[in-house]
Length: 492
Image (cartoon, rainbow, N blue to C red; front, top):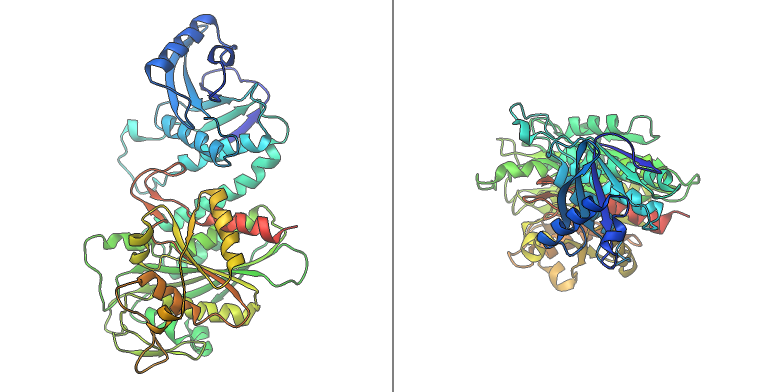
């Protein structure tokens, strides 16, 4: 979708949106319209019980010269300290008009004294909410096809283009994540995931390093290879490095779980709903999207994004419950449940990342446990951390962007539940506290002095209902959070 900014309304055919604060006098706000149109709009808003709540929309049609124009009144509410307000407004307008037949929307901010950042957020919200992936649909009805192609935002000042450049980069990152998560597993598998990322970041200055099976075997990544050995698709470990700080300071390392399809392996999942497991690579998708956003806006920070990629399949060569594997760290792992595979691939990726880059900060994202959805539903991701300061920084970034996280506990009592009678650790604990014991498993692979956080995003990467910034399907969760975390804490 094209987003543009202008000093005044264009000529021609378009839908017109007029935002209003709760205290605005309606007839004054509509002063650019003639008296008949103002009266009609006011009566229509009253009939629709339009009370100017944030992102509420009242719709009517007015006459302007020889044409009829669609007029949308959109509420801003009364809270002016809500960063997400203008994204909600843009998203609500796009959702209203996406398949309406309208091709262009003009949002008139004249007289509201808004900043360029606010206007850019409206554009971001509209573009994010309009994202669709229709490439496999061959029989869309005329009414189901998107028509809205452009949003023009009027009267927001001179700084909007600069503000938009940053949000445009974030939008590109979110779009990449949604694309990767949405694609089926016969299209996105470890090798094609890597190539899709290369294409998306071409020319941005991101350095790529890819480890194949032979390299993993030489490094002793027995946990990762154990998960992958039942699949015809070979695993990959993708490292994307952005050196934006202009120095040799240690990078912040982001690690994403990328199980491109998860059957559960020998501990096979129930058939009902298994098709959803194409998005078990949502953590890797979020890391890839974050790297696209960070590089796209030329962030002044050093960041490495690592995607650990494999399929978990029930082949004759697949690992069995009861097998013991040796991780790259040297710790031995008893495989109790082959469906607890995410932690197995992550532990080797985390060890490699720490030895390769010696980071002070390590953040991993993973659709790790169904238990996380039982705990927090689809409102928050769970965050586990060995450092209060890091947890607080990520929490603040989540609140600012809408990618919310909720702190969960760790502790020795939970850690003991992962002891194995025949190996150093087992990969699955009791049914209770499943997301916590999964996090304690990962914590055993965090090296001394590293500040680490684990985000269990199982309930957040896919939605069965529309949200503020997405339709049903892939949400792009995690990209905005990571981008904001880097911007607020590691850029001068």
